[in-house]
Length: 251
Image 1 (cartoon, one colour):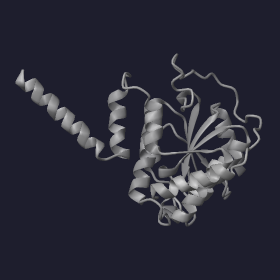
Image 2 (tube, rainbow, N blue to C red):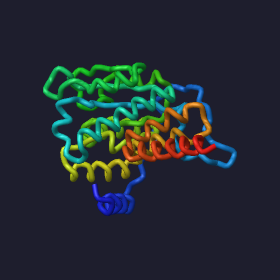
Image 3 (cartoon, rainbow, N blue to C red):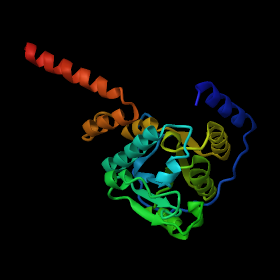
Image 4 (cartoon, helix red, strand yellow):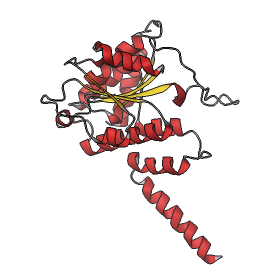
């Protein structure tokens, strides 16, 4: 989507936006480790200890209808979220409305790279939040920050995101790990997210926001994930490694 179009959409929505009254939080209380530094850094960012990833209806049949992002990019970004969740021990819940129907099965890579993910089958409900088992699975994590992605963005992400927000939870929508049947649908969805107080984000932002610092034991593995959301980053790593090798040989 052109940057000017995105900025225009956000500006318009923020101008006419309405305040959404907060509701009592749905999630159960759980121990949350603060990610805020003494400087105040991190106060507005995702706290991994209070976060669950919800990957919704990433189904093979639905992928064929996606037109606002390439299917290859969509799948790669979704895989990155699965791998990130495993690396940082973030809970993952997956679901599909009817995997035996024309929408097809879930992409297998999610559970391949996030073997701890919990799959919640639905009984045909379009909106995952209409399914009691799904809502209970979210409640059982005790997390109050939901990072959602899915296909379609305008339906399978939008509907549960609106309901979760109404229940008092903090909701992020990962736009480039989701897909819609047209750019117009995507732009409309983005506007509705912002108007409802749902935070639109991207996979590279989620990765960097949860990464926070290179001074951590998982830094090397996190670095590899950047090549999934920005393939050219692999070239950066390769050139750096080559320079390091040359420097060692010169000593």
